[in-house]
Length: 155
Image (tube, rainbow, N blue to C red; front, side):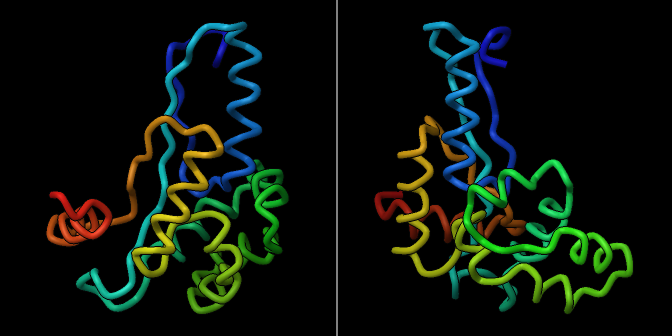
């Protein structure tokens, strides 16, 4: 994409090391041209959402079950059995899916937890080279507003 585009969007559920690797490839293709970039970051701040459960866990399961995410998972450093995840998803074994997406997987592929942890994850993604972070995984407008206010108190 670096050789043909003026901008790229990094898919959700990518780990910060994978983002860095991808952006290095974009830069190689760009041959010195500036390519704008942004990344989709699944986000959940504990205690802010209307629903008590974290909706990001199952979303990560859906995304990371794809074979093309093997390098992303490896670079993220968490252990994930993608075959078991695909099988659990196909069989709609939601509790097993939720268990496979461990806290380590969540920590490597999303920005979840308390406000300080989410800010720290955003800092990691920015340090990996993302120019813009797209906060995703929040469905209700009130939850979006609460999340944005928590992350940027000046709102």
